[in-house]
Image (cartoon, rainbow, N blue to C red; front, side, top):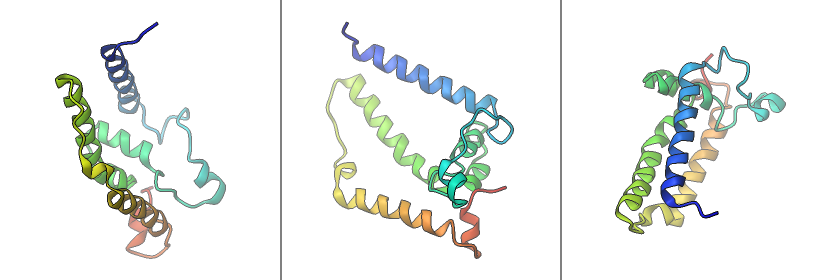
Length: 137
């Protein structure tokens, strides 16, 4: 059975819509079906993704400050994510293969990876101002 691009796009949009509704309706702080961070559970330290579920709930309610308090890296990475999704949608609509060379540049990839590792280390430093990088609450 061949699945065409339109079916893939619609199923992806439907899946993302369903995930968005779950994060809108249920608060990860109050709901027990959200998976806790295994790295934090085992080590007591915060990984770069710690607080992302709570941040997504805050973003679903348009509370950008609250989302930033849970995971600033996620909030600051959203423009890059939206831009890349926009390019994918543009390519789908216009049937083109447009790519932004910036995303395929090794310097960008290494810089972003380095930023994630630096964020990971700094959010576990127990002194101000680094404590503000750890998830709130």
